[in-house]
Structure formats: structure tokens, C-alpha cells
Image (cartoon, rainbow, N blue to C red; front, side, top):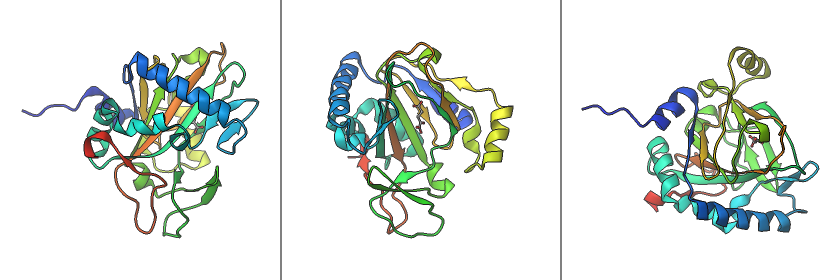
Length: 249
Ligand SMILES: O=C(O)CCC(=O)C(=O)O
């Protein structure tokens, strides 16, 4: 008998994203909130924090917060990632986004095109290069991004009014988009708003066009953004970090 893949897998394939509730339990969310709050206070002046009127992102959160790095061993996350990326999947980058009444920000439609690597190595089709929070980043060819999955874990209830992620369903089927192609998709696609309850996750492909509004009713909106890749980079390039998921340690 031919079984259909679970709904979330079909969603990711067709629409480029899926919302999965109850990935983390209440106590896990509480523990992550505590760990992340400590890091926000401690790293307020560091280059890993992007600050536009208040802390809003910690770039290398997997290095700063051991509890976040440990999520590569979380069986609930592995059960979501492995069917999409395979059993060699690894956690390659983690960021933390924080929206709050003090730091209410928005971001325009974009694709996530950069990956973090150990060191700069000039390999064909990789570029341009940039340095973010002291770490080398590069835009890989699209086939690498097509084999990645982002898991955005929510530490607060999130809806349109506190600046939920917005996505253009199906836009992940494009390659890297230029400005004209991106604007055409924005004009011709109805956006979807990713409302999620605390402990739930948005799974998305990095090439999916996404954005978010400033909150109209500002309330805390903390998101741990974890990027997973399916396989090593072509040598001599290496992912900046490469923690294998739970099922393949
Ligand atoms: O968390 C959000 O609202 C979007 C953040 C994001 O995608 C980014 O800064 O690249």
C-alpha cells in the first residue's frame, strides 16, 4: 500500500512551510525562556546582537545558549527534520529573534540566502561573502538551500497583532530571486500569516519569501530559528557548526 507522507511534509513540499503545534512542552518552553533571557541580558553589548532600539536578534544563539544548541538532540525536532532532510541532517546555525514592546521591528520580503561557514574558501558558485558577528557567511548555490529546512520554535503565542511571520506560499519553488522576480511574486501571491502557539513551530524552506510587520498590539514574540542541512558542504568548505540530529548521533 502506498502511504501519503504526513500533512506537514506535503505542506513543505507544496507550499514551502508548515505550522506544527506542541513541538516543545510547557516546561521546555519555560527552560528555554529562562536561558534565552539570561543570554539577552549578558550579550546586550556584543556584536552578536542586532540592535535597532533594543535587542532583537542573537546571531550565534547556539554558541551563546547551550540549552539551544542541545535542541539538535531533541527527539520531537528530529522526528520533523529527518523525514525531510534524511538521517544525516545536522543543525548548522541558530538565531534568536525577539520582538517586544521595547523593540518592535518589521522586515521586508526576503529569502534566507546566507549560510555560516568555518572559513572563507573560494569555491565556484559560492558568493558573495560577508562577515556577520565575526563569522564568515556566504550565499551558496540554490541546490544547497533547497536541501535545507528551518525550524522556528516559538517561545510565546504569536499572531498577526504581535508581528507573526508572513510567507508567500509556493515561492520556495523559485531559485534565488532578483528584485523584479520577488516583486512579481509579491504582487501575484496571497500572503499567509503564520500564527503559532507557544511551544509550536513554523517549518520553512529558506528560499520561501517571508517578511513580518511591526506588532500592532506589541507583546513579546521570541523565536528560536534553527537551520538544518542535509549534507556536508563541498570541500574544502565546512558548515560553521554541524551538530547531527538526535536519531543519527
Ligand atoms: O522573525 C521574523 O519575523 C523574520 C526574521 C527573518 O526572517 C530575518 O531577519 O531574516
